[in-house]
Image (cartoon, rainbow, N blue to C red):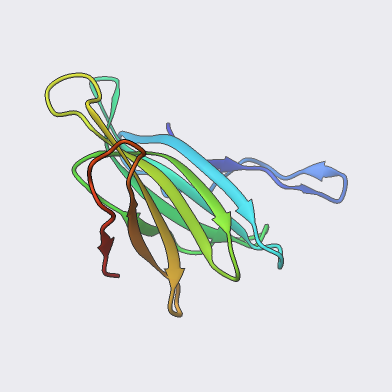
Length: 146
């Protein structure tokens, strides 16, 4: 069973294992990142897809906040036809940022890589995406509307 679990050290002992992510049939967690803001809120980003023939497939970026006692609802940050991997969560001025890599496999091994960044806007927080071209990539930066 692939999932993100937590245990909290509280009052001298660890709490029991608790599943953070909602389990889905054949779920595959590929990677995650956890950070905290100045107020102590946890910010969790992860790459999730499904297992197909023992390989991760359909990897998308998800996000969730937590208080250390409970977790808020899951948010789907980004979906694409590429594999969304290696999320990294960070904090700016009262905004969560997530950076990840999109990997396109056109005809064989991983042929093309692109980097995206997403940051929270509005209330309730939604994510706004931007493409970050890699050095040496001839593409230009493209912003995607929220």
